[in-house]
Length: 130
Image (tube, rainbow, N blue to C red):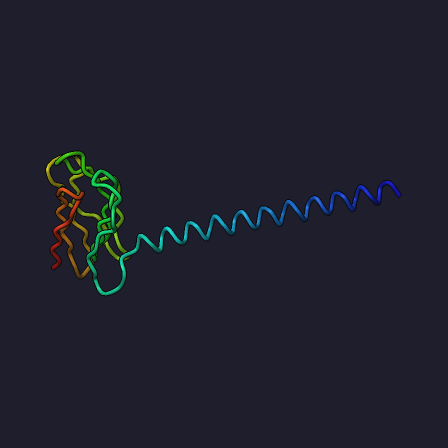
């Protein structure tokens, strides 16, 4: 009879551990998917910047070719992360701190040039598409 209890206890522990692992994996996947969805530019080539709580905080600058995450230290642009949109690649990126930073995203049919500069409220992007 003791062996039967041990088997039941082991089975119950295995089921609980498996269930908790599945819950943790599901939460991690959902969080990752939400972050990826938020970083993608919407269809139709919109150009927007996410609001920043302060001028020094990193800001996502969206373009049809991809996203640039940048912040400002005074008048110096700091490019923190580049993420090309689906079908685009990074062909040129000036990531060194300076008064401005240039990034070029290219697909088979389009080229998007992003010039990032700092203003009083944080980083801004001038975007050209061709």
